[in-house]
Length: 210
Image 1: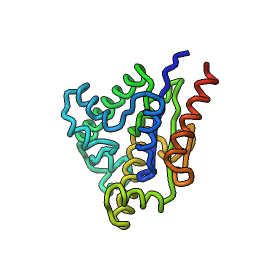
Image 2: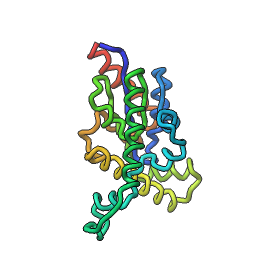
Image 3: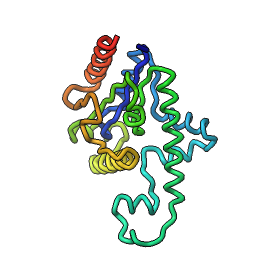
Image 4: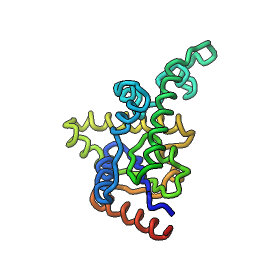
């Protein structure tokens, strides 16, 4: 069996998922990918990074997307789907980049439906981080220098965006526990213990599969 392994991170906004993912990668001595995927997708496609940044973890904002989500009352009218096609193409490019990375090396990948895109990988650990709302609000206030009201709004907006993105491109629910191998409430055990928990799990799986 190949010693290569992949960890994917899904996370509620403010749960500390990105920080934990980076610490996991550093501790295991493997590559970490989050926003780095935007640069790689840009190089792969020839599109500027700004194009990918605008579409990053966001479903299409096209007219067709609103029809699919059932939010447009004019669903029986003729429409164009240029924007949807563009976003789908960007997702396809980014998916190819994620698959290429996973095929080449051990790594930690944050978000972007990576758990779904890499679902056929044998040595894959899919992690979902969540946290109590007061923990997330406090963390968001500290990290982004926001008021409590603004922090609440940021959390709700980001989670809705991630949920819609995941649902749209995978057909699954972002919060469905069946999508993950480990689910951790970071507000209960903290960042450092969350890092240890995931590393222990990964090492146990690797040992069992030797």
